[in-house]
Length: 291
Image (tube, rainbow, N blue to C red; front, side, top):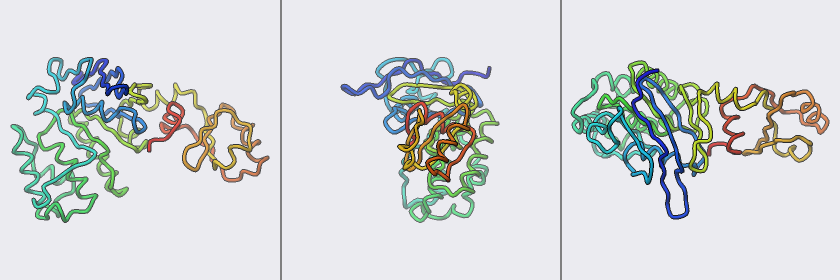
């Protein structure tokens, strides 16, 4: 097993009667990508903020590199953070912004390499206020790597990116992983979590309700096949275990034939039979999709 660079044990954060985080334990190893997934209100943002040192835990322990806390200056030099909402000095250029952030750390990554990796070459002289949403997002993620960090937190890093830019950022994340960087990812895209993550933690109601590799979670879920159809037909068929999310109904089955026959009898023509995905596991465990 690779070196353990971060672990949290039984961390908690309570607000009066609300248990925002209720005894969460997480491990992160060198050169690993983990995803923390959960519906709104599950406690994942509070958990990540405690790991980053932005919020103090009420209980438990968080340890970096076997002996440091998130509040130690040594750790702050070793981590990079891309928040879900980023605020820039709008009058600065992209290049000035990168150099400003680099000046805050003792160690820096190579500026030219960073600019190339995040496709910022053509925008170096542009003021931040003139960037598109996708360009600002690429800049925000780039800033998380300016100090050549060992642990990187990426909160919704591909929001606002077009499909091509999103895939490119996946490649960048995997490249940094291959260099031994350890990355904690939060995302609303299940395919992103599946493609990038070595392990996934699923949270709900302040607790980790499942964790493992994406394939382990799918295999252990007991899901064999999933049938998807419009929710309007859910009341017309006698099928146990139907979950409705948005406009569609989902049901996991061991034997698909009897279920398909029932759907046909009530004139359901547009349905999909497919293998289960990480999103199906999430739906089964939480009863809802990520909003």
